[in-house]
Figure 1 (cartoon, rainbow, N blue to C red):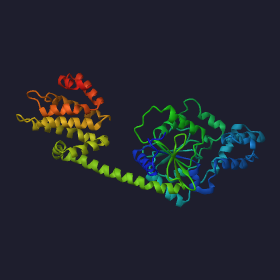
Figure 2 (figure 1 turned 90 degrees about the vertical axis):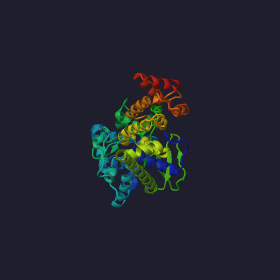
Figure 3 (figure 1 turned 45 degrees about the vertical axis):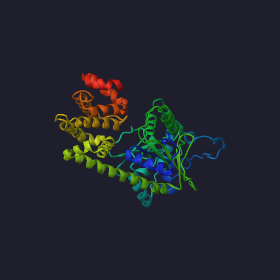
Figure 4 (figure 1 turned 60 degrees about the horizontal axis):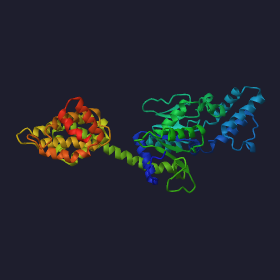
Length: 450
């Protein structure tokens, strides 16, 4: 699940997290260690939580029993409930609900104002698209009070625009009956085609997942990681992804390293130092994006408000043309509506330049524009409307490409020199469309390079 082709440097990992944040697919996977860092000793580990709950229930359960070595906490929780049910003469279900109620009450903890201020600022700047947590508490929601929504294990992972969903995989303390804690609760999670398992696996596959205060020890989480790594392995990822685990260490290693399961490990002194180290990368990426957005807005203004000047520069200046195409390809959803009429004006202008007898240079310039756009897009998808306009312009130009009478010899030479550089997928699509439209001259030009 490592997105990097080679082992990255520490700065490259932090940069990757920042890029994922900006891309909009950063997932924070938060465990008990996160609450422990923010709340301190009041935040109990799972084992201590079960021991305290058993004491509250009056169950004298021997947690140090050697026979329990290797037994998971869900099984221990079930044993506590069975012992309580037998001693109190109640059903197992009643005992389990009582345990969950005590756990709900014992996880009512929140960070200090100082901790809350620091982490709220950092989480807001990091802007995760979603958060998954195994915690019952509402510490995360206290850090993001305005734009977060708690989602329990029995709710679909659907949320309102502008909100950060906090998906409590094991339940929320405010709904004790839905808490996942005993073996019987976990059994339901492994049913075939269980929604939570599939959704979690897909979320991990489609995200850069940053593990904070979590050690990948939960069976259903491990299953989801296995699914995302193996069941969906043939799906290509054209987006930032991977699993990065932040691990606290007394003497943190500077260089990241890989675990056997493909998780990239980044050691830190504590979570506070990690966020302090990460934030400059987030701010740098944000500044880059703001600069790119300003350039995009400037280009859009140029295309729409001053098209005559822009057309001349687009035709005559290779550097300007490259810059416009680069911005278009990176931001075509924002620029395509302005670029289409601009492109048509540019094509028309090249034909205006060739209206006089013997003035064939404009035809060569038109072909140059078409080839530059197709080659610039490479194997990326062309916006359908732009493809249609390019195809029409190519048909309009085709009869002038060659070395015969009435043709642009410069266009012919350019076509012979550059046709091999055209992306095959776009050539095939142009050929198909030209055949459907009965554009015989265009078909003849394209056929030899299919």
